[in-house]
Image (cartoon, rainbow, N blue to C red; front, side, top):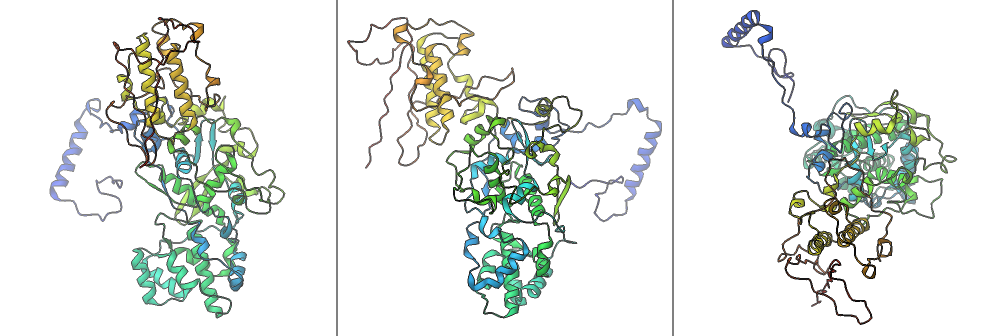
Length: 601
């Protein structure tokens, strides 16, 4: 809502003359102010957002709200409260660049693009982008600091990253325009700089319903021009190609089909195109797109996603990357990786980032690249980056570890991680919401105080049933954690039940194998992040009804749904083995379950 002035009017709106009743009310208020007792005046209480109150001192942070002042509006705040958001739709035009290539018949256009400093963009753009990976990193972006808040500290995309990954200029003139472009001005610019007619320009902007043109329209009208064309046509085609290039890469907007005509003004003088700080403008634009995507209601992410994805590959090579062995350091670092869509779900990537350790990060990935591309001095600049009407803060002093230094910012902080834990939201989800488990179901689980074998079997089956119904997109860590916990329940050694009762140990003849000997699982990975002492244990949700099975993907066997056995009925026992020792009546009951495969028709 626009701010209101002292007289009660909205700022920016035309001021109107007050009526007689309004003037009389003002006089009465002034008289009351003169005679009223200051101590008896009731000051209005400003309403605060309920979500903001919830996050005061929440276990997930921030405990200190002096830095992340608007966190109650962040998507991570909604996720912490149990709401979820699907993976973002990504605006990626890497495949469209292949539809307009500059071959030998268009060498004059390529020479213009090469002088502009934007030629690397024609070859280094990734054709695919991973929605779960980029969406999970977007949930950790904080607009106030323009950094990713990881479990071990802050990280961000710096000007050094832009220069190394893209090989485009990061120094030069600032990209700025005096005022927003209107539709009529856009039509005039298209006629002047691209040589179109008034009718064609008007028809195109009307179809876009904005001062923009479609990327398809640029390709259809100018991609057929070759070196055999006139000088004017080659100049028009060069400008059109550059506009198409920045619209597919640096300034990709959420329309996913068009580019703003205002950038055409930068290509008026083709000899001056290389004097702009394209890398700084690209970084400011990406910062703004990440900031917008942190709102819960936003469902799409724009900007140059090749820069963001390659930055993730560089700094987290063991988690997400697939290197190209034919890469040489003379080329942009974006070409070092084979872009691919990771098979993990968004929930799985969230949990992987939540367990990430500082030793798993590559803080200085460009050491081998320095001989070809040294660290630019502008990377240490601290201030604001601008692109058109977008202005974003840039603070490399918050990520000194990415430059090989010890993180000592801010000053006068005795211990960095203690301060960072208070002002940050390091854990995106509470433990009880991970892997699709909800908090409401915990009350419906069998009582932890019971010590009978039937109750332990029912609890173990409930846990395994829930993991099976979660589908195959869950990570191995989730399956390993559920199996390990189910083993502890059946063995009678789970920590929760041990605090209430002491079940009798199983005999040595029926000892359960250690988790390390169980097949298909890696015992070194599943660790829940530390939670506050008042957090509930990271277990689990209500079992689905025995008669209703969750939906399964086509072609996959239906998920296994096994109801817990009644307390009065013993579960089925396997066929007796003559060589096995006699079972002990006091030992915990073992439940055998056989899954039937769906017959193919």
